[in-house]
Image (cartoon, rainbow, N blue to C red; front, side):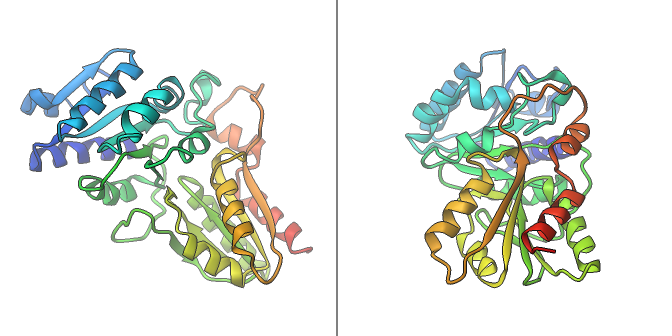
Length: 308
């Protein structure tokens, strides 16, 4: 489970480094109980006061602590956006924001709990590194890299029990990872979309279309070199994300490719969540199906862009 793997890593880091402090906001009573029992002076469980928690984290970081703060993603982004910008990022503090339930994870709770624009609003904040890994094993590889990273980091958590789809043995913040080589279409995405991109690549290969697939766990800073070098070889580009198509990963890629002034024009399709509040009720996967976040829709988009 991604969240459990993430928080267990915080505990392990705290045992090794007394700079590490954990702040939770309205989490379950048993969350990191062993951390609380063993290191009570570095464990804080705040109430439903996210803005206060970020201010508190910023104060501790000003004093040299490396602060890991965890609560529900929609509350950690929208509710205390100003504190993230002014208290944490303006001072380039070593705070690691851990958001539970990015995208449509909390689908049955409705739009108040969805985090469907978080990648868009976070990536525009100066100094902030934004990360969305694909599975629990990738999370385990990421977390040690956050300890000595300079500046604030935002980590988007998925649902939990997501299938393990990554294959790397290490993690480098800011690096994109290749999962398939091909020169017909470049497919790139972040977070839990990696599994559907890999499946789409297999289907396309069976249809005689060879896709290049890039997994981009770090949304900011983007691995622009990897994106541009792959795009130079491709005939079209598809971005896939569990975020609104406005201003997220797809928007960032479009900006990069437009400014790169490539020799040949590229057709581009952004697959993600529509610019609307969904009237539908259902699970995360049911919303995915309605929004077109699926291997089949990626395949259809690729064939359309290629004029097949």
